[in-house]
Image 1 (cartoon, rainbow, N blue to C red):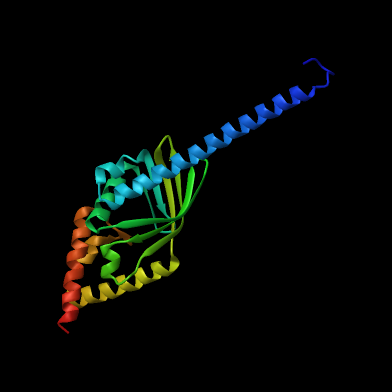
Image 2: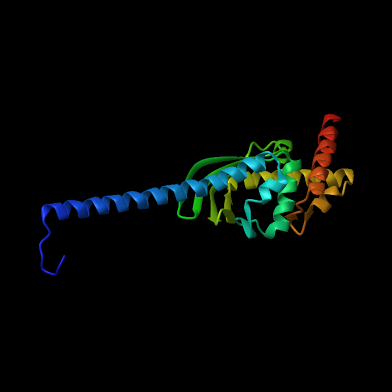
Length: 206
């Protein structure tokens, strides 16, 4: 169509149809991309909750970084394995809520339960929001914002356990919390469960 020519009705209609088709294709691609990104996260959660450590690790990018805001940052597959092994021993369960996504980023609320929380009489730990970045089908980054309320409950429970440990001269907790940080491993998780059993047994004998 030359410069200055006015399109006729058929040309206008053809142009509009092409635009509508292009917009439809673009929206379809965006929708599929969002669904695929969310599916990666959902599939990881399924593997985690099944305590399938090897499968769970396949969803992480090699340079994965997880930040528990204000608490710690873990990086790389080796540290992810330690976390997954810890969670498997403690029967960790993660529940996704209010999940949305934008481009390669998933936003959601994660509710976490495990035997550690149960032993401490803590109902659950809420990470709200939790942000997960997915690149090429792999989780590259996770930033979780833990509930301040649960953080205080954990602090109070550990304080009580420390007092009991000193009273009965049980030094196990010193191996499990070093420099103010939890030691994450399958062995550490097993030691926590044994420590809880001794603590509860001591309370029952009172």
